Length: 429
Image 1 (tube, one colour):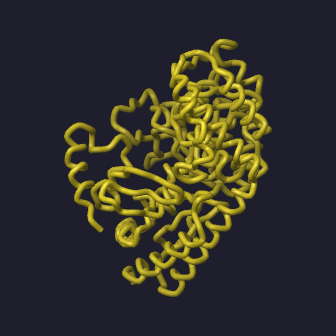
Image 2 (cartoon, one colour; image 1 turned 180 degrees about the vertical axis):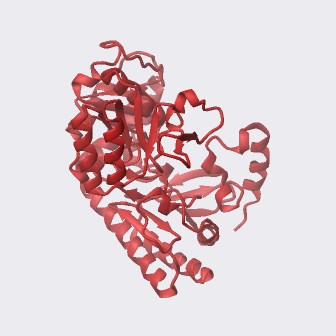
Image 3 (cartoon, helix red, strand yellow; image 1 turned 30 degrees about the vertical axis):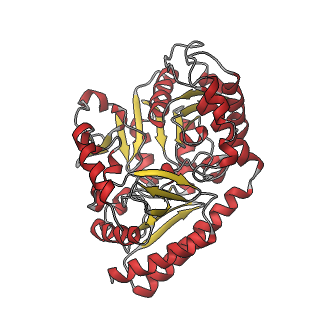
């Protein structure tokens, strides 16, 4: 493959943009490559500036559940664009999309639109603190909830209460009320609530982690979490920025049968455009300004382009439930084919999958926590990624990201991916 133009753009980008990228994972550092520059996406494929074609398993990190440039979804976008991109005032489209989301999620009575997943989680945390009049937050290792200060925390080498920021510029004061617990560990969870339950304003969790690779929560873990938060009157937030409307029309909470108090949504509700939202019980949401004392605002929140495209996508998903079964079947075929090759070549690797989300981990151990994720062989993943890329398969350029399929991925795409996987695995023997 020729990457001449991408390499040229990469050098130029680094002169004007920190690290050459506007989001760190795009730098391809963990796979030891220069970044690719994409110029087009159509269906299940993306195309770089050098004319290389790839079967895309990034799908804009999840939201493009119907694939790239879906003609049916985009058909009225030009008309909306002609009418204006932003008014800073109310539109009917905001109501239509909000109503559709509320109908899809029984745990959501009211919803507030924002502009990103980070903004959604940050706002939901503030709301939970305002509602409970408490300060402490509990999050889990390996779960990513955006880049707001209080959530950029990892557990330290001492106890769970001794935390370290995962970014420079985050003050100790910003994280002093943030606790971190191991994912899927019921014993540790119970211990934290025994000590801090009366002080905890909120617990936030990805019900299926998509930022340490795909690591689903155990059902009994989520059930215990719901039980404890109810007992201690702590607000439970499901961060469904990735899983919302992707695992099923009702998200992870429909799959698990566990309902949180607040839910955060991401770009899928805007058809991939910059958007987010948080919603939940009426009594909590009525704390948000202008009804209540918890302030949050945004000029572009509910902008007409994102609201229109989001409504188109969610309406299609509602009317075509077969989308979810199709994507799950494609993901299952991919999982089974990869596992078959792993066994044939005796590679230390495993696959995690829930519905249409999956990850290939280069470790012989079962992966159910961040600690187990950390045991993965990053060097081997880098070699595998490059081998797959040469075959025209674009995977997320990190061992710690999930693979996303879309309704546009075909049987032929899966077969080609499995053939490439076999070649790549053979090189790893």
